[in-house]
Length: 177
Image 1: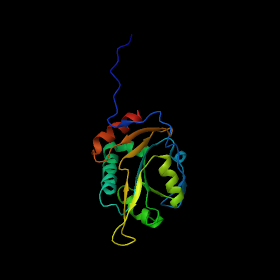
Image 2: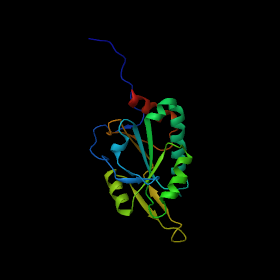
Image 3: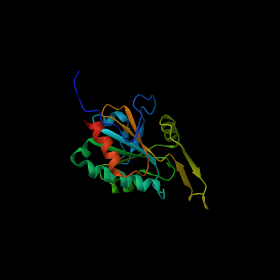
Image 4: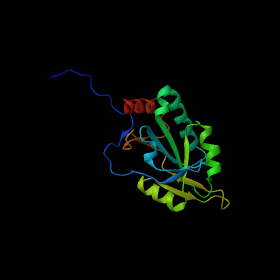
């Protein structure tokens, strides 16, 4: 029997083998139709949010930008996707100005209300409008974590919000091995 070091474990929630979150059909902030297959060969991190989010979304995007820095050259093997849950306000132009500010490699994805609902259901993501003082000043409650897919397009991890870059970089490095 060979002696070997125990396999490293993921810090985040291992979703390997789950049978949902298999695909999406959305448009990126450059106007290009996208599906999960477009990113084969890369790890894909998908976060659901909206540009006018006051807290969770910008902190998640900064966290992912820090993950990319921590990965160094391996960051080129990772694609971060920001999927809007506010298609009413998050236009292609708004996503194109918001998402790449965190890292120029990041892509914003959007669809109409039906496409957004379909992707939300497929990924088991919660999102719901919360009325504001005016019809356009609403917020959107939403799932705060991110999903990670391996280079073959299989769901592998759920990343908890607000843990900092290091645990995420650790898990992505394991998936890149």
